[in-house]
Image (cartoon, rainbow, N blue to C red; front, side, top):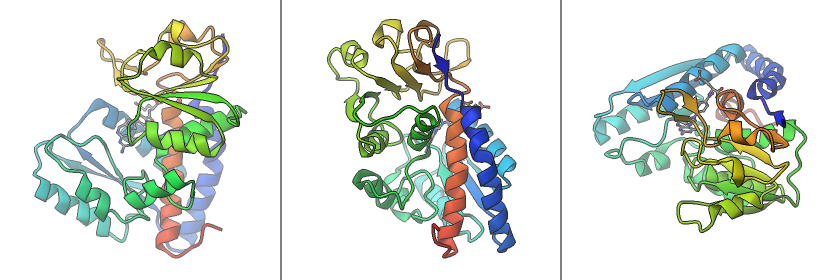
Length: 287
Ligand SMILES: Nc1nc(=O)c2c([nH]1)NC[C@@H]1CN(c3ccc(C(=O)N[C@@H](CCC(=O)O)C(=O)O)cc3)C=[N+]21
């Protein structure tokens, strides 16, 4: 059985720094605050929300949730978004995605204040991720994957990494973060031919497709590192990842569980981003 990479362990390591930095801001009269905007009540969003609330509380960061009805109109939605965007007490905005189909995300992307854009919606922050400039915000989940690998001493330089999934929230930006660390990346998606073979070639396999347990026992090589970014709900209503943990834990050198894996690191990165946003917004440099 390989090493199970636990999100809680990484979060524990980050905790003291988060508390200290939150306190430093409070001493300056700045009360760091995250605003979560949720439209509807999807289970993946609710799971993130629970995790994020808990993490902010542990770090001493305020957290408010703006809950919007699933049938909100575009106009009302933009209005609600602007309220949060212009609220001087808010230092970071997390808008759960994807949005319901009738809502258009494009406008929001262009109006969100880049300093409050802690999960990388704005083209400004996205461009920075793609050009390897880390002065902006990368999305929290991809950054959590990197943090997890670093914590467990897994080097990326020269490694063959297969990323399954090409979303703007995970697959694409994650590929850029990996590339910056000199990995050789293959991005797979629904049209990929012989997915199994491409996955088996990977030293590090990252599943971010949003399909419950799609990565099965024969899809990774012996001693591979397997990272599961999926947050799904199975037929029995339980939370599960994109990786069939049972059939892969034996042959993997390292593997992340769901829940208890990347998600716990994602919320810690989110907290770190809110603190950085608060500094940017108050003209305090990155140090
Ligand atoms: N703009 C945007 N960015 C996202 O990154 C994003 C999103 N929208 N929409 C929803 C999905 C889902 N997601 C989770 C992150 C952490 C946990 C998490 O902390 N999970 C805990 C369990 C928490 C619990 O369920 O109590 C764990 O895995 O151990 C869960 C789910 C990010 N997503």
